Length: 601
Image (tube, rainbow, N blue to C red; front, side, top):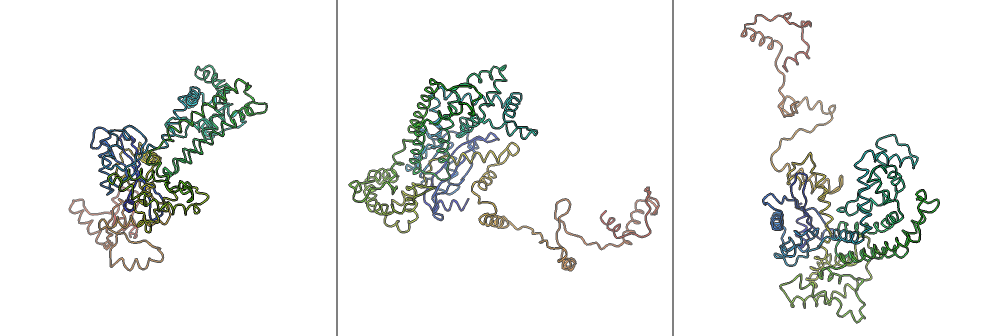
């Protein structure tokens, strides 16, 4: 933790990713992550920062409480609020409220903070808006959820579905594990989980025939009969085919948004690619063609005895056109419009730079430079704008020369991020020529746009703090989350050095008793016997405490004398070997084993 804070302070700016949750102990917690440019590795890095109880000193988790807890935590971590340049949240009103949201309160202290509504949440809202605008797609989503509940909450109906499925596949399942494996193919669709609807649709697509046969056998049940009547239609099955083609494209975009380190430079190409893929599906009409093949003789759906008429095909084409068109519009509405400050960062894209002999080259980027100057240096005014334009007039020649150096394939970055990273890495030389633009490039790399990391943090909290471990305090939880989320890979050199450092610090806290090192008994027996008489050593007793070993120096005559003395004091008469009630007779002489027993007692 301390090393990460030192790297952040060395970077000079950072972005904060925040989410709130309620844990298993019904405590409202704030989970925070930090994004920054690591000069040592030359890459953008995101790491877990803190988890704090919001209601420990407050009665309500309002924006003022969030602000107070956040400022207190940053002060304890020795992170300056003035160095925060980006803030991303899930878009809740308590986070992004225009007047009194957490972002608004932060901007009153630091006006240069860029507040971003998480792109993953915005994509989910775009999909929700599309489903809500089309009644039939919304009905399909409802039926998918009802179907899962029908089988999940009824062992009898699940048994019928499983029997139908195994008979159709001609599979004989004897173990309970095998039955559960087959039954799990129906997935739950949840609106609050970004990718769950895709898996639910795929499961119905794969098992549509067994599902309809099971519903047909359960027609005595009203819900089963209603689902059977609605699902055994060409329109419903065609909608499943359409969703099966469209949802993987959206899931691919969502997974890209959930990447470890993603910034604004990635958004435009990803969105453009997604819209082109959706247009391709609409142009070639592949879902409807696949449906017609499946319903034909010998197809995977031929046993349903359904025919795709011209009217059905026309309905499905209309539904697909409306769905994809509405989806593209909602993506533009939710993701296409961005803050002017984020759009201005696109000047760092070498591939968009016009050639030197182009008429636009002379004034290229000057409008964006003024936007950046007004936001990053609000107190400097026109003076800083002129200074940045002068720096930009020279830097764009360098960026133009880098155009030929941009790799043809950038698997985990974009040309904009590649250029900004190069500018920051060359800070030692560029810092004298372009001091302000180097700072702006670093801000570009530190502004987060996705809240996926806090969502991962929330999942880890629920894995660590379970019903049986619900009393874990936040100091322990913070340590466990740092190990889980920020720790190195197991058995790696970094992991070994971290463990050695942790042990060193633990030993340095106070003087601790050290146990002797244990070695080979056969090779060390002589040295052990030689040292036994000169120095004592500690050993672990049965009661799990450290005790000093006492050498046995008492003889048999001394023991017998002590016994006789005790008998006289207790007035029990003389000691007789045959007075024992036991049937066992004692021998005239005692073995060393018997002597040890007496000494122990």
